[in-house]
Length: 174
Image (tube, rainbow, N blue to C red; front, side, top):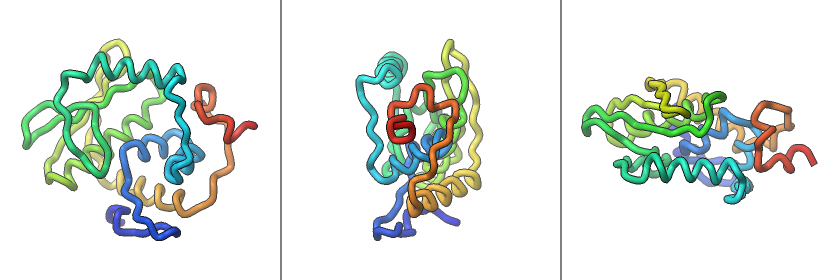
């Protein structure tokens, strides 16, 4: 399947997959559904949100960004125009598959928008850096899964590791 942007959802709107949607897809099915339906509430005062924003301000304020509109915005980019390295920062030191998926999405978007073959670097706590290679086939499968979730009903909640610090756990565990 090609991109989801040409495929209308059940309400007639087109789904344009974003990096944030890819992040939620690999985090939690309930968060994904809420995000895709515009019902996800992220409290700016939550400790994880505040610490993430503070880290972003420290790490990325003087960095060069890349415009990936409408597919999202990566934290920063280095390298040349023909061989860029797209960077994403992560607040955590484990459970980084959602951030990897988000970064792979940005690599896919760079290919779609600019026909460039970028690689990614995921910046973890304590200065560790993990290289992320493009996987356009996996990204397009993610887009198909996002469309399925968009057109389905809200998934049944299941206890998973992200539940512990989730800002939206009231949706699942009232």
